[in-house]
Image (tube, rainbow, N blue to C red):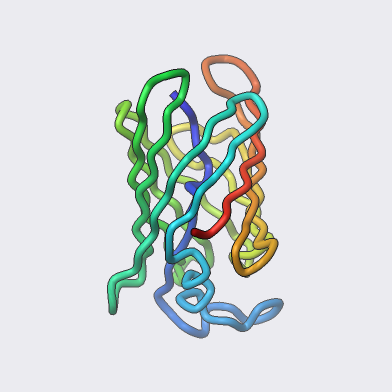
Amino acid sequence: MRKRLLAPGIFAATLVAGAFAGADATPPTTQLQYLVGTWNCSVSGSAAFSEHTTLAQAAGNPWVHGASSAQISGHPISEDFYVGYDARNSRWVLITIDSMGGYSVSTSSSPALNDSTWTAAYPQSSGSATFVENSATQYTLDSSGMADGRKVQTHEVCTRE
């Protein structure tokens, strides 16, 4: 089973427009709009596979909901996730549930979604990822952590359909 720190459309929503004072004054909801759409991702490193992800945000809902599917070692796997911004605690939050029974929570205290650094928070507290918006149609996610007692590193490149 693949452990994911940040789901592709990996990312977040917002509660308060003024939550960012400092480096990036763009409200979290606006930042999340970058993720809305359909993405095709290629993952390389310790685990290599392709993934299809769709993200949507309902009107008035501060969370972005995503769903992804992939074939990993010949086995289909799907994942549902929510990403949002917790203004009260000044952090981004990613919650994932996969078809293999896995689940996780990751957070980022980075002030902006772009160039954000994420850490696994639950059920494990090891692992990290960095999310970078390369262009309007491409982002990358570099992650590392432990899975089944071994170190896993991946580089994910996602392109908007």
